Length: 200
Image (cartoon, rainbow, N blue to C red; front, top):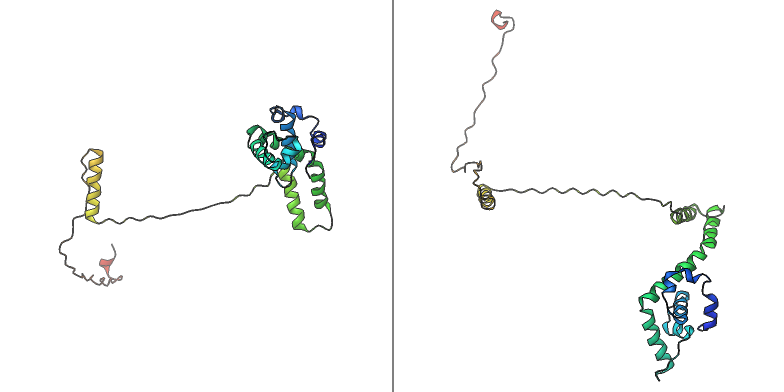
């Protein structure tokens, strides 16, 4: 059941004037609409429009009017910023109880160690002392290019065109005909170490 405008007025934070996002809204109905949206567990634009105190004057059905009006209001950037600001105010007001609940989990003797560790990490993270993870990534890539003499000559020709200078690459001469001869190495000579010529 949608709230009434009076109920929403009672729930509007007393210091809402300090919020530039809420001050940017020009009417009480816009502020009520933003508050109604910030409190909904399941988004219902027609209910938020109804709760804010909007009423149809164009002769359309009430439901159709509130659906259309709610959609129009929800897409207004000023209202979207106000909804976000109201959500942040609500979260800030529940930090104390949330912190107490997490600390109870950390300090309880019956809590599993893995649950305590996650709760402690949450407390540290939220207090600005975050747990850092270091991930090292190593990547090695080997690229091998094999060029024959014709490809190498074409490469140097292209370099000559690009640079405007002549280059004379040291290309290996192409092998047209070759013969292989196996050369036998002579056996090492026996040295007589006792002979007078062996000693110098």
